[in-house]
Length: 466
Image (cartoon, rainbow, N blue to C red; front, side, top):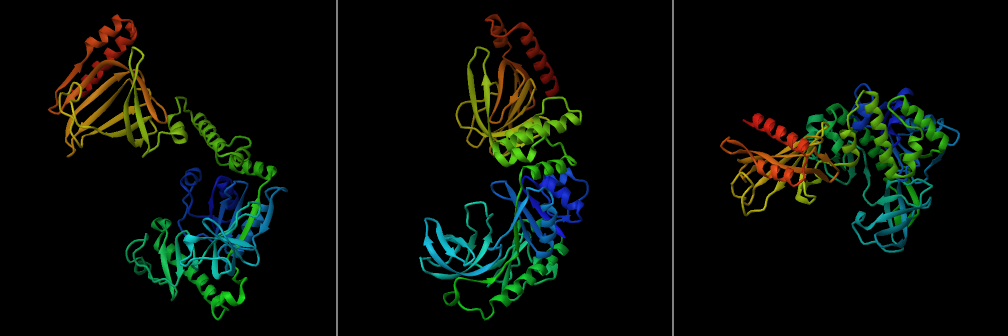
């Protein structure tokens, strides 16, 4: 009774299905955080996935378990509607090509039409051709899409897949000699491909998944044994595939899902109603609810962690330094790649420096291969930049004293307060540019209270670095 759940309904469905006695497996990170207890990384008998338009879900997998899951979800509300898919996932057909499009061909399956991307066929496809195809991606009946086909026959799973006509693979994602480690073999005439999720699964779980895939492969072999060639029987179905049912959630059902989700985590009224309508609104819902969680837990400071998760900055993205001047100018110090984003508001970026000239106050040359590592923290009155050469050796540290940093999604903004602190490669620490701060006060660009704060910060930084 194992079930894998994905999409915007995952939290609510996880609660409902666990309550009904199903074991949810391969849970996503957010689901693991919201529920007590561990989730196994083992084969899912059924996968429940939100449709691309977010109006409902597909329930795909072993017939008995899929029927029990579908029955439970149909009880959500009187406006939950269900349809059994006549062209189920994994079904194998003899089909006839009726039309060729820019990226693929339309194939008559008898019970409906499918779409075969040209990249999923080893041979050129023309109108009138007959060929054997398999449904690799079913399509909800209320959409305009056709099920996606492939000419390769396989048993596709989230932990591993078996490919008919392939050879045993002992080195895939699952690790070297995985078949030896789990003491199991794929069915003769089939090759195994390890999926990324297999990395977290136990050997017992992988062995069980391979056993189940072998059983399905045997059923396919039986269905194709002695079957007529496509040119002699198209269109016809060789194998009906796995159970595939589509559920459309109406408004009452979505609000029932809200109630189930609210038992687990903060959930605004109309959570699923809003998410089903617009992806941008979906992000706003996540943001509001994350704020509610912070408020309930006693967090009263600016919610940097929640804001960054929803809007950025993100690791591997870019962040520029918006270096404001007291006279009103803004200088962008270039963009760096985000290395880390911490919940306390600290963001680390790296920039590759261009050669030529010297580093301010440090007096060392800028050379090819130099890297600047900058750490900015939301609300802090200073930030350090460490310069290193191509071998990773420190060339010096420059600490900029500024107004409290604000870390926006793509820019860290502040106003430079002139006075700074530097630490040379030999360990010498000095405070610089006090005269520029004094001049800015005289010109009226910086108030005396702000200047006093800058001097205090510089003194504390210098003391810390010595």
